Image: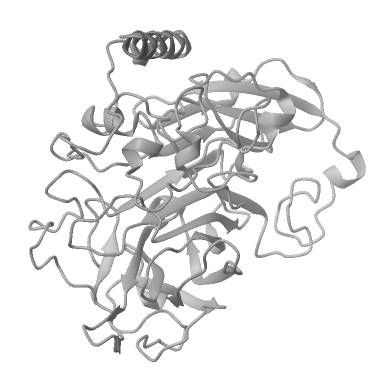
Length: 446
């Protein structure tokens, strides 16, 4: 009886503390074991933790520089100006009075922070994201202060692209003027996959996980001319070799000028002269075809893939990083003979396989949505909205569950988030107080 009372008291205190931190905790009960791991998700839910947002800026002056940052007031952290500036998404100068970009931000982010510089005057504005859009007119700019811009550079344009050197990220290169980051300049995203699709798995999402950042290069017209895809494997607990790539939907292979630095080991990947994958309708970039046993204690693969476009592309047409990412799983037969396979692609929920991937042949994904019959995905994409550590709390980056630990045990509100169709606990993966069972998660790999 004493043990029962102690248990009841502990649970009561825990629930009280959690309720004090987040209003979503009201009337929530959380499973503590794996006796029933099924999820009952709404039809059409795709497990997305991020949203595509269109930024529309109208400028009335002849010339002004803009910086746009990720921002949220839905967290329990208080940010100072320097921390906000770490979350730069893109910069640009309006062309013919218009600056338009499509960005990717966490679903719990409800605002953007806009910094405008006109001459020596600087103003900042926080704008709401409404229906996945932000509309800003320069007439709204307020609180102008003196900019610290170098007056000598402010009127100099070394490369002749129409962007002053002080505003140009590449003042000596007429083809590149600005940078655009996913998720932000100092942030990272995480992709985590199970490898045994289309079979039911343990849903620890540690067979292959990687941390990434994409840096897009924009010209003076605010169009993309190429990008760097920087990644590091942070978990690889699969027994077979795993390949990783991404598809740029709506972009033809012929629109790519070159792909630099893929890591290919086997002979299963056929490449076009520009090093996109051959036989594909859309441009597919194979980053690597052989990741295996890069476990804690061994060297983790870290690499940057560079992609150049033949002609500039708007971010609206390009789509947002990480595009359509996928793994493909080679396998061993019953005799342990290595069998090189390319068509067994594992994608994020409700995404389509590439031209070379197979549609589900049944098992636990009969409809080919990459969502199992018991409601789980085989892949997750998470965009970290913050890159700072708050006080003594653990690093905010998503940590991968340990072997055989169902994600609902490592992250207490994953189940609630999924079954609400993403409307509750949108930041379930964060380091919010009481959100994680830290002992069930792997040590963080930066």
